[in-house]
Image (cartoon, rainbow, N blue to C red; front, side, top):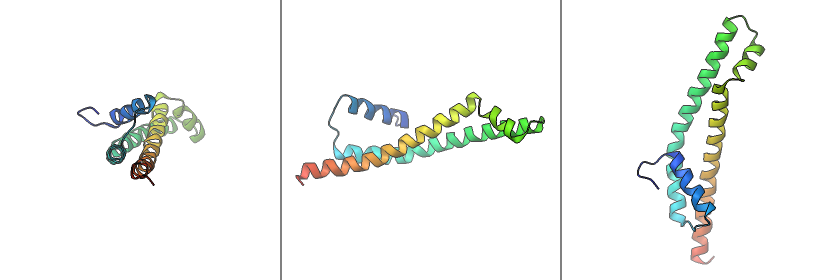
Length: 115
């Protein structure tokens, strides 16, 4: 992994390792899950920033005289809303990675022990 740990570098490293069919030791899976668990907080912060921007746009549209439904539809058609949905999906992927990393570590550890 790179010197500075980011969720992107962590996920890229494991993506490449899995794609290249490299064996990943149990300790590395656990370490990655720990880092991902810590780093996902930054991703949640980004998500709430994006959510706030979309909500503020809806408020502006309502103040301009649009109905709540119109404001919602217009706000959800923006690039900001797209970024919000992409960020939400990214967090879901990170959370699933953490679950899989824990399971992989347990399975690999049992495999090494011969259970």
